[in-house]
Image (cartoon, rainbow, N blue to C red):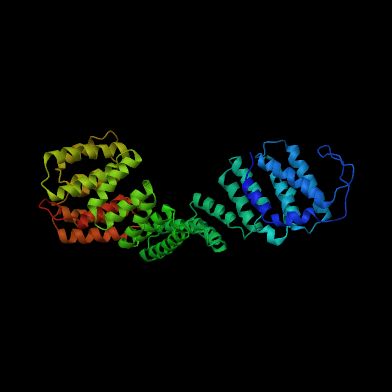
Length: 467
């Protein structure tokens, strides 16, 4: 197995126009040293003939994807070395010889960067910026041999030091830092790649993706919005450079949604969906329609998403069922469907959070919900039990009773949602809707509780207990 053969071939083609000149050049000759892998010559070869022979052998080896014997690439390297010895300043000879050396170690298990470092450093500076660095060879081999992430990261960071002007090295470093969840370092490396080659859409996209991750971890709304604005700008830049990639448009739509720019989000989501219909574009258009209060269109997309991914998102089904019952009396058929859906959610997602909300939204009695809640095979989590107890005291205790902190920041971030829900259960619709709007606007990411909050804040009034 060999790596980056296409890249090696492209590098060799950079100076292909010089090849014709090199073949016709005259230079002092040098007799080839005896070598068991090299054909004996009756007369010394000129530099141009050594290069022509070595280049032909090298491209023969490349064209066969390295399936021929190692003797072939060794012969090619020998002839290219002879040509370079005769004309050490010939840029084409330098590059082709170096690429052949890199190719010759493509399967090495004991590769030492020092074996090709001198040849790399002797390359003309104009060639070095696009050449594979010795450290990148180490990185490729470590990846091929499934080395751990820290080993691969050490190699690729060294590659950025050997050649700080190659954007690909920075991109690979960014991806490894992202894998380690070190998003600031990942964003910085991706930014370096983008600054070197701003015309490449994928580099802009990588910057935006890491900034969005950072925004999701930011607790301060102002700092989060600043990161989201930068993230959206990079996604839009990527979509302008590559207008046929729906992922760039979809992620810009998601960034706009989190900034509260719903019309812009919808416009980007529609463009992404028009380019390709897949899980990402369907979900993105669903969210954009939802947060633009186009609920009927959103539910149609939820059904399309079900067909696309092959299973039903039961949590969305609860949302849809609850919304549609706002236009008509809630009958026994809907109640049976709700109970089955809630039970299915618990089985499928191993969570009671959304079934808990749904049961109260549909005004099930405490007994009905307790039976459903406690009928699950797994014991309720402590946090779920606390939520159940808190909501069960509605109309008995004041809504302002503080919901006990669990000590888990992710769970505590939901506290305002449950406090708002208590106002609704107690019949204080004005405070309920106001609190739900605040919650929906304050979250760091688009999780399902955001959809609940938004729908609760904007759904039509009815004569049941909630809304």
